[in-house]
Amino acid sequence: MTSDQIVVTLAGLAGVAWVNWYFFVAGRGAVVAAETAGGGPQRVRIEVKGGYSPAVVRVRAGQPVRLEFHRNETSSCTEEVVLPDFGIRTYLPAHETTSIGITPAVGSYEFTCGMGMVRGKIVAEEE
Image (cartoon, rainbow, N blue to C red):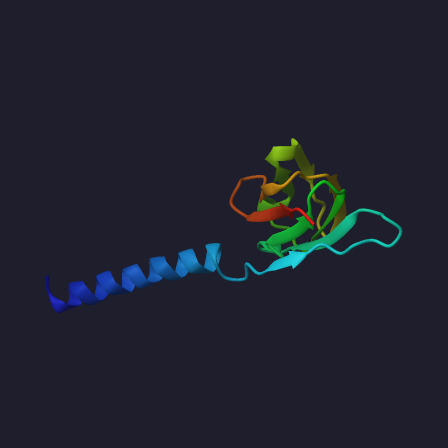
């Protein structure tokens, strides 16, 4: 291999590593759902704009949860949210908030866009 080929190969590997970090690791800090006064459902607002923010939500297992998806874009990729473990597939109108209610058992549950490219996770833990 010539030195040019080595440089191009290393640059390509660095690019692949960056793309994987950006889409699968960066910005994945978990947010704990807020408790509602008076025993209402746990609530969390999830911004939808090129991805989900927060992408990881922690909730108390066995308690109702209200996920409030605010879609702040018009990209066709994020016009649906799918929670396959709960049998939910919901349209998200642009620039509006759509609420989805679930009651998860202990475990980890994925939510995605309609095409499965944008992903998030709900982690339900015991108290």
